[in-house]
Image (cartoon, rainbow, N blue to C red; front, side):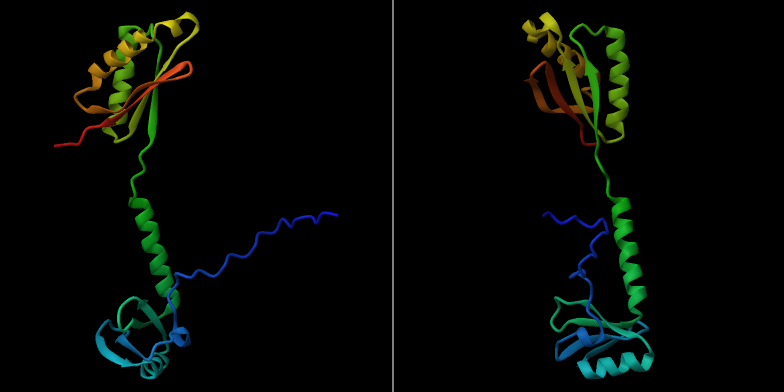
Length: 185
């Protein structure tokens, strides 16, 4: 008989990258920074713990890789909050590059190509990659050279701000090319 799985989420494992605090620090001596940010120097772990206890704060290991490890006297919850704040800020500052699609057909007219070229230009100026997808139908499959010509024609409209990262290649009834913005001078 099969056991039914619980729908309750499992508790997350304790994160190993969190800083060690107070009695979890297992080294004989540490480089100590007091609650005001002043360097005290290399002290015995017992002395550092007693200073943190006297200040009513925690002894937090801020640089575990250093020899001896760097510890700071501060509130641990405030330390965690500042870490989360830095992670959120780094995530917000990270630029995500999207790939936008421009769809064409071998018989797309010049007016439509101009409009699609303007859209592609906007995407490229925003820093996005542009995938040019050319769709073949019916007997158009026997004239792949028309598809290549259409992609070249489209590239002439945006060649001043873009370069082809991936040459046109056939994938079934589609031909695809990838265009990226050129580096700004």
